Image (cartoon, rainbow, N blue to C red; front, side, top):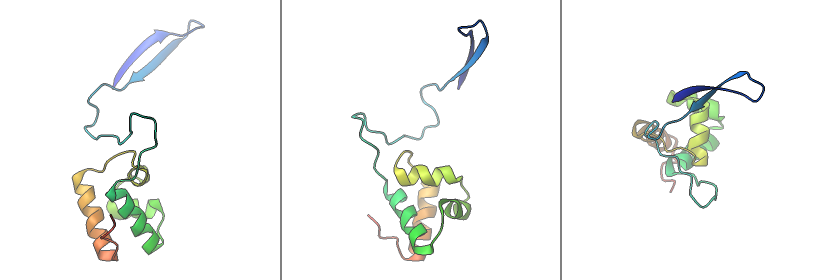
Length: 102
Protein backbone atom coordinates (compact mmCIF):
# COMPACT_ATOMS: atom_id res chain seq x y z
CA UNK A 1 0.00 0.00 0.00
CA UNK A 2 1.20 3.44 -0.83
CA UNK A 3 -0.14 6.55 0.91
CA UNK A 4 0.00 9.90 -0.82
CA UNK A 5 -1.14 13.34 0.27
CA UNK A 6 -2.47 16.02 -2.04
CA UNK A 7 -4.63 19.14 -1.89
CA UNK A 8 -8.35 18.73 -2.44
CA UNK A 9 -10.68 21.06 -4.35
CA UNK A 10 -11.16 23.41 -1.42
CA UNK A 11 -7.49 23.53 -0.40
CA UNK A 12 -7.82 20.83 2.25
CA UNK A 13 -5.28 18.03 2.58
CA UNK A 14 -6.53 14.68 1.27
CA UNK A 15 -4.87 11.31 1.94
CA UNK A 16 -5.13 8.62 -0.70
CA UNK A 17 -4.21 4.95 -0.31
CA UNK A 18 -3.17 3.04 -3.41
CA UNK A 19 -2.64 -0.73 -3.58
CA UNK A 20 0.55 -1.58 -5.41
CA UNK A 21 0.80 -4.35 -7.97
CA UNK A 22 1.68 -7.70 -6.50
CA UNK A 23 -0.50 -7.26 -3.45
CA UNK A 24 -0.92 -10.22 -1.15
CA UNK A 25 -0.19 -12.87 -3.74
CA UNK A 26 -3.78 -14.11 -3.61
CA UNK A 27 -5.43 -14.03 -6.98
CA UNK A 28 -8.88 -12.54 -7.18
CA UNK A 29 -11.13 -14.62 -9.40
CA UNK A 30 -12.61 -11.69 -11.30
CA UNK A 31 -12.94 -12.33 -15.03
CA UNK A 32 -11.89 -9.52 -17.36
CA UNK A 33 -15.15 -9.54 -19.29
CA UNK A 34 -17.22 -8.11 -16.43
CA UNK A 35 -19.09 -11.30 -15.54
CA UNK A 36 -19.35 -12.02 -11.83
CA UNK A 37 -16.83 -14.51 -10.42
CA UNK A 38 -17.95 -18.08 -9.88
CA UNK A 39 -17.40 -19.93 -6.60
CA UNK A 40 -14.38 -22.19 -6.34
CA UNK A 41 -14.63 -25.75 -5.07
CA UNK A 42 -13.62 -24.44 -1.63
CA UNK A 43 -16.44 -21.90 -1.76
CA UNK A 44 -18.95 -24.56 -2.75
CA UNK A 45 -17.70 -26.77 0.08
CA UNK A 46 -18.07 -23.89 2.55
CA UNK A 47 -21.67 -23.41 1.48
CA UNK A 48 -22.35 -27.17 1.67
CA UNK A 49 -20.84 -27.33 5.18
CA UNK A 50 -22.94 -24.39 6.32
CA UNK A 51 -26.15 -25.89 4.92
CA UNK A 52 -25.44 -29.32 6.43
CA UNK A 53 -24.67 -27.90 9.88
CA UNK A 54 -27.10 -24.97 9.77
CA UNK A 55 -24.23 -22.54 10.36
CA UNK A 56 -23.83 -18.90 9.50
CA UNK A 57 -20.72 -17.65 7.72
CA UNK A 58 -19.48 -16.38 11.09
CA UNK A 59 -19.84 -19.81 12.71
CA UNK A 60 -17.89 -21.46 9.88
CA UNK A 61 -15.26 -18.70 10.04
CA UNK A 62 -14.87 -19.27 13.79
CA UNK A 63 -14.44 -23.02 13.23
CA UNK A 64 -11.72 -22.34 10.62
CA UNK A 65 -10.05 -19.48 12.49
CA UNK A 66 -10.63 -16.88 9.75
CA UNK A 67 -12.68 -13.73 9.32
CA UNK A 68 -16.30 -13.96 8.19
CA UNK A 69 -15.41 -11.87 5.14
CA UNK A 70 -12.95 -14.58 4.05
CA UNK A 71 -15.70 -17.19 4.02
CA UNK A 72 -17.99 -14.80 2.13
CA UNK A 73 -15.28 -14.09 -0.44
CA UNK A 74 -14.51 -17.80 -0.91
CA UNK A 75 -18.20 -18.61 -1.37
CA UNK A 76 -18.67 -15.92 -4.01
CA UNK A 77 -15.38 -16.67 -5.75
CA UNK A 78 -13.96 -13.18 -5.20
CA UNK A 79 -10.81 -14.55 -3.54
CA UNK A 80 -9.13 -17.95 -3.73
CA UNK A 81 -8.39 -19.46 -0.32
CA UNK A 82 -4.80 -20.14 0.69
CA UNK A 83 -3.83 -23.82 0.59
CA UNK A 84 -3.89 -24.28 4.37
CA UNK A 85 -7.53 -23.13 4.45
CA UNK A 86 -8.48 -25.17 1.37
CA UNK A 87 -7.20 -28.25 3.21
CA UNK A 88 -9.03 -27.30 6.42
CA UNK A 89 -12.29 -26.78 4.52
CA UNK A 90 -11.81 -30.12 2.72
CA UNK A 91 -11.21 -31.94 6.03
CA UNK A 92 -14.28 -30.35 7.63
CA UNK A 93 -16.39 -31.12 4.55
CA UNK A 94 -15.28 -34.77 4.67
CA UNK A 95 -16.10 -34.91 8.39
CA UNK A 96 -19.58 -33.50 7.76
CA UNK A 97 -20.11 -35.79 4.76
CA UNK A 98 -20.18 -33.20 1.99
CA UNK A 99 -16.57 -33.49 0.81
CA UNK A 100 -17.47 -34.72 -2.68
CA UNK A 101 -18.75 -31.30 -3.82
CA UNK A 102 -17.50 -30.51 -7.32
